[in-house]
Length: 174
Image (cartoon, rainbow, N blue to C red):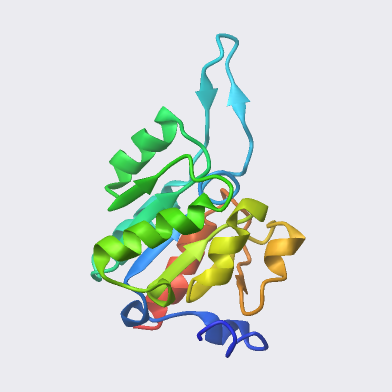
């Protein structure tokens, strides 16, 4: 397994594009800074980093499918996924649902979890991060996530292009 072989060497925990068939990311705390912004009329806002979006598109050009798996269910996520042109969007994945949602995608693609890279930051990402072949988290992820054996702890925080950092590391290994 990729993660167990690399727990003492984080730089070795970076896959090559040929090692993975699918890269997934969480939203809140990963693609965003985790803040929830509300207007006086109740309108919800989230700030996304455009560099993450460019990174996802760059990885897609190598033939790797990309997607979002999140516990939230908001039109904002649908709009962002549409703008990015991601291959998969799974919302409302709660209580172990992120792993189940990812397994559904894997079944659809005919791949295994070992061919998946996932970036997540909190306890609701733990099961999925522990199951995929390639796991990464933002620098400000919760301690439980940072403690997953072999996880690659990124230097950037959630919402600060941490997904792009992960993708740049992957693409540098081409």
